[in-house]
Image (cartoon, helix red, strand yellow):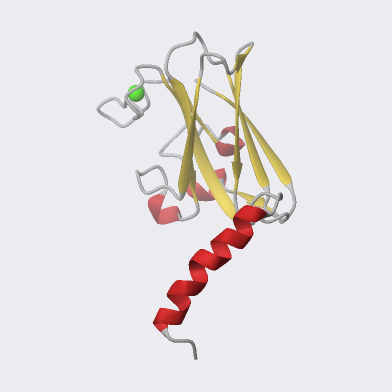
Length: 152
Ligand SMILES: [Ca+2]
């Protein structure tokens, strides 16, 4: 077994090898998740995508990963596209237009979004809170998965 000291020397060497190749560090079979948020009004703020892979974390701040894109300069008509690289798996996501640019989704006293927002699969339950199992989707190795979500 390698000693810890030996490993410590190995890691920078490995990083050097990776940096010297011309291919991106992301594995070729990493799927692309393309989120197209539509009904984006105006150029203020940013569009955020929060990606979850655990039902227990759903719609909390404990997202698996997140990405935000400025609206100005990235808006195409009423659409803003955000792409993320993810390992294959099962996910659900929320997307919102952070109009006041504070990094958070403003909610009212019963927890409903006050800024334009949407969920994967365009889930919009009429009664009760949105459920993870209804919002989840699968992305497979090498695939590009598109979620076109209308913000409301
Ligand atoms: Ca906000």
